[in-house]
Length: 440
Ligand code: EPZ
Image (tube, rainbow, N blue to C red):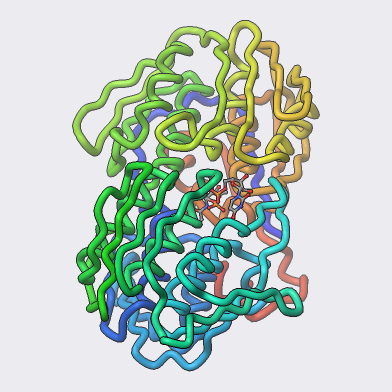
């Protein structure tokens, strides 16, 4: 497996361009299953999860053309298969986003039940209960979710109350309800910018969705949807990661092609810690950290509060801040795996259930590290940038899932980081040849 070798101690300087949002591109690609006409998506990030989603769509029978690197033209006219197999779902939970569109358009879908993952059990019970509210028959069979729409053929609009905020649950139900008979109201919906972006695409395809971005979304079902063309929003988590990279290295970065308005809470938190952040315009940030950082507590919550996907990066930053900080993770039950790796570098961190208590600043020493999930690996890379000596982060396939060419982007602003490829003698699978060539 590829690794990153990082030699710490350099301040980052320069400008970096942000890619499209993985967590918007994935549902927007799934939305193409709702129509026989072509959906064209621009600003698609070149990351591993997008390759997996593309493979899922092609396995179902869709065609995916890429006239340009970051443009996908998806056509789902000839869907022959209604199943997202275990092999794919186990590599990417977001494959469950095929469930809503397949059920709504074809009246049937079979999706492998995603098991737990490194950060938590992550059930999809709220998705399934909501599909049942729309009249679907849902059963579990040999590790698969098998869903069928009512005998009348179409799903039927209903009022749905989510007991917990779920991002992909909201997206799945928004897509399903777009083709249901009658009106659906989603209460307790997730408000993430990725939800608003998906609703924008669906409305371009002829859906009638209002209230996306708020906790109450109304969907007036239509008979059929057409094609559409849409540009994916910038990745706010990649933006936040580079803001933390500038801060932890006491550097200065111009972050371009981002959307500061999606990061209000992160900008506030980092400013309170002592990072100087200027919003140059609606797509550019200037981030600088010249003075020492002050520790500050944080609690992760659904948007617009502090995102759980920035928690690991923030923890790395807090190892370098003066004083004690308490990080409370409320979204996932097991999202502190990076903590024990940071401790191996010398960080003073106590983990107590959903809480992590840090003392800083602590000099970090380079070490061999193991990435456990996407955001944890970003946190280890940040720590490697400030550590004394050399850090080797193993299993960077995690980071390739959601960051486009992160080592090249970091190197371009002065980081001493390189990718150590999987040795040429290792057995090569079909996917790794194609993907690595494509991703990097
Ligand atoms: C999305 O995951 C993101 N993934 C995650 O980003 C992100 O961490 C998460 O939202 C929270 O912001 C994508 O958009 C592809 P949830 P999702 O359903 O939708 C519980 C990254 O790093 N829950 O909002 O799977 C669940 O266990 C990834 O890019 C149920 O109990 O998350 C969790 O505790 C990681 N039953 C909480 O709700 C359900 O049916 C929030 O999960 C659904 C969720």
